[in-house]
Image (cartoon, rainbow, N blue to C red):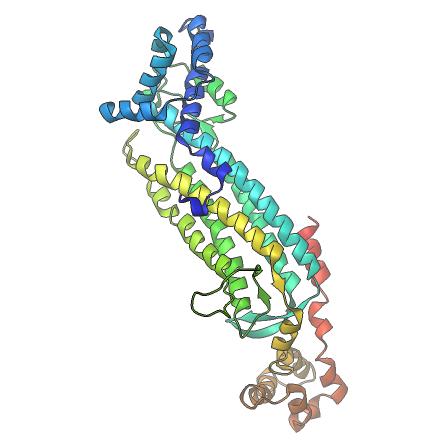
Length: 434
């Protein structure tokens, strides 16, 4: 991923030096197990750790060897032999390249998951804080982008919290599913390597044993992993789009923080654009982009082919690095979000009283008016508010058919904003007191 949308800790997981370090650990742990089984000398296993355990592998040298061998694992093993010497002949005994590549990839995805889970925790903390601040901040709920009924801004944020909390659970499950190890040799039969070697490597790498690995770890695991990242990215985008809509000039109920010296437009000095949340929409597309290729990787030929390899070299780093950046950016947006309660009330009252139409409708039906007639009476008064800028309460009180069914006090009672927020505590308890 390009540096602009990358953070160092996540990038480090995918650096070549880190990859080769993991490859070495897999091979060296396998040698320990082979030595314990008396397949190779214990002195050889020890020498491999002693001579290469703390080495920074020469990435350029490995690339130079690969240019000749056209095989990355062989290039690494050749370079390792240059470092270790004669004992290197015991490395990779009975193993195949996928044992190293797949186990390493899963180690990297587990490490990436741990960072992403930390990101989600920080985001949840930020959302929870702002939700409690605005628990009772009245705003208008919208359906189809049109005023519906009153809600609170805190409830909007509580929804975001619950959604992201579900995503945390999904990622925990995806992390568990991807954390498997395969050291089973060609076509996965263990013909040339004991299953106990796999168990030892899995334990040392903090993975579980893959039950049936053919010659690769099954890619349905990876498909689910990247699909989970795609769902999380979609939630990031949903929250970002909500903020973008609420920042529009004619709405302006919330706004991204605009720092001193920041410029919104090269042409128009007045502009304060929602650039961070727009950026999040774009980043979410990049993360989701990996889901289809990951699913297409499931259908490999027989026990193994490498059609998945080129895909994963890209989607592994790109998806995790991008989502890491996006989660951190969204956390910053939430923490610094400017909220305008007065604008929220002003917007809700743009069509005076109209948001209470359902309460009047229900009251009429309870007073004995048919639902069809009740809807007709309420709608005809509501349309005057839409089309003429009238006041809904005034229109209802002047409508003889309405006042024949409801008293003035009964009509006025239906315009109580508190009626719409009476269960906010219940919802907050469901979300935040689990």
